[in-house]
Length: 298
Image (cartoon, rainbow, N blue to C red; front, top):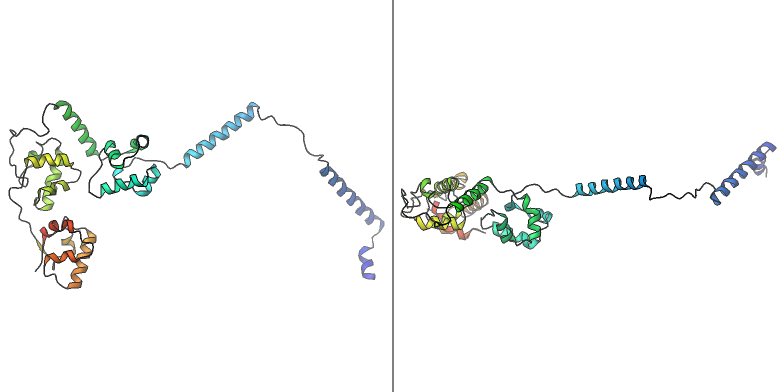
């Protein structure tokens, strides 16, 4: 009993202090209950200063939203990926059409060609076409063709056969000879000769279609004048002894195919016939005739 008494025994001044503390708590509770500190003042949201401030906030929000949008920089439409196409607003079908077209080793050289291949809508084309960036030689070729068409609309697409050429053999023709064909300028004439050197000469006329950037219509014009008179003599290498670096020089063999050929060679020890290349998994059979132009087996 003495324990409880020691905790609850206060003198007069202590009891007065406790009383005033309780009274203060009750007063504060009353103020809160009757909302003494609240203000009934109504803020007029139509005041000019508030409207201006709100307008500034809205403007900053708009700027922030615009900044968050992905920015589009100039790009070559030939190299649009799935991710890039989705960003531009293209559908999966439109992207697939472009990728299928590019697998044929052909290139898009204008806005119209892009729409023809992908079949995008006019509205989407007008939105993304300003960002198309084609190589300089494409732009220059268009300008040259435009100037040529204005000056020579009455002429045939192929220059008259009366034009003198040093040779009509596609493997002997010079850059000047190729430039007699409409649509073939300095760049393309040199490119044809460079690719011919890489191939060690054209064995098949349709190899001309493999020249990078050369339109089929222009290639057809070339082949209407230039033919293969004598097939080239190509330096072949033995597929069983060739080095990896030497094999990569084959214009129709890339790094992955080169690895597969070497792996297959290790498996069989030695290829008895060059035809065995077709036994390699995923071997590009469509290019077989061209690949073996540069190879032989024991």
